[in-house]
Length: 374
Figure (cartoon, rainbow, N blue to C red):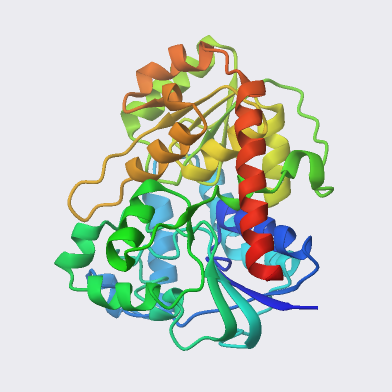
């Protein structure tokens, strides 16, 4: 039995990171491999900011204090802090992950991805710049990626911060490279001269709704709209509009993944229960990559809010426009919250979307099969 490692964002406490990691593990195990998650050493961020010099405890306290600055009910803030603090203990064991870090094991194959494993030009001191995410010093017989993403790191940013040559050097050492979006593909092609394979995020590739036996049936006695967004990203004006819109539609607003000013309820649940809540939702409004994916796999009417990247600030435009274009769902995107009413009224031809997904899944499974069995 081949021993395969996955190096991803598996320790990040959010639902998208968990569900993509779980999905990729399932896909590789289906090929008869023994899977373990591999950790990397967090480096100093390329874009320095004051927080980078602070230790983990100080950053944790500041994050907690930041939560209290958001406009949301106090009960939601306290529930959100509990959710963040207990996430790892509750859900990491479901991935086979313990508190002990698993650095640089001997493997038959190391798969780097999915998620934004290559998003190295950013400020996040929990990730930083780690050459290990590009395969440095690995002890695997074979090295590949699956649906790896540079996020909003562009070739221009890599050149600006003088990382292009180093990243290109590491990329050329991979046996196979699979990316999940056009921006990432363009960077790989420019730095290596080779065209990568395009694969969908594992949450789309693994058929959660038909293959995962961990998604429960939940019963909710009221109609609701899911607002799936990180805390602090929905503006007060957007929140006020969503609140008025939900009242008009006689829907409660359920916030998942982050606390929101307009939420009637903050839902603290397991990653698998998230999919159950999505499945039962009347509508979804999100500004995240995985919030859009959860809407698609549960066949919900949804609107995706696009945030443009300005300077070094974080935007979602590159990855979301690419994702929705591949699924034939560009008409679900907007930069204006007011458009959500018209967008969510448009019926999605999910039979057509599922046909596209079926084809993409075959390509992804063949990529994994050929590289892991070969």
